[in-house]
Length: 355
Ligand code: SF4
Image (tube, rainbow, N blue to C red):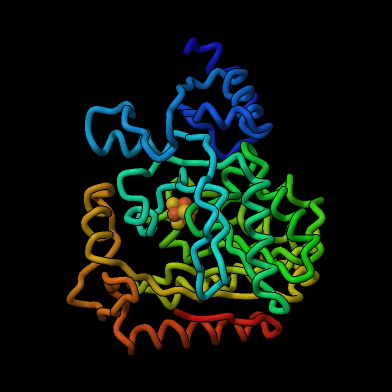
């Protein structure tokens, strides 16, 4: 690309959190308006694109080493059709995971997508949102008269991709019309402006993932800054959305009490009083599997993330491989300390779970 084209491309995409370096399209994706729109945008902004027979089989990514390919994959967008419309379950935060994207451009060292996406860390977005929403409707009807919650951030950070896809906005408008449907998603990005005037009807809860300065600084490259996330949270609350914070992963480090105490204090200082009604917190301690440890050590060889299995407790997993969490005493200390701080500063908030 010429310097001028790159400059033009930057200008056109400066409001985006994520500008891919390469885009793949499944030919059938171009039969959908969203696929067409993304295709036109990629052409207009001068982003190189290729065609692929399947969004699940991208084999010719550039890069000489595995690490280089991984970094390029994180900047590669694949536009396809979601064929499997059977949703996974998503406990404890929702009944089902609603699939609108898979993969993420950020580089959080601890992210479980490192292992769940295996050799496919590139970012897939699905253009058949109408079919995905039809499937969601089926799940809602199946569970009536119960209310069914859908989590849209199980396999991605959809807010970071929203300026390109607009899929969250569609889901929010759709769920706004479902008396028995609720949408939830969590993000480390601040690109929420296009969601503020959606017809959410209070049926979507937007949660922002926050952490101590130490964790954000060392383990969350390529995400929005803490201040940006809080500002976005306040905007969403003012737009009438129920909001929440997920503190995850909670990490035991030297000075963790000061770090997490300061986090709750900063939330208290930054969050205007008028946006605190119906506020939720979800608390998740750091965990890893043996596979995750070896993948993380390869991809982020200098990471300071502590993954010493001798210092952890093994927790059996339902689906085979178990996870390493903090020993009960440490986990309880983290839970107690952070919960107490939350209740002190946000007496009206609800802690949904600690896990
Ligand atoms: S922002 Fe979320 S999904 Fe993306 S890398 Fe970080 S933890 Fe993973």
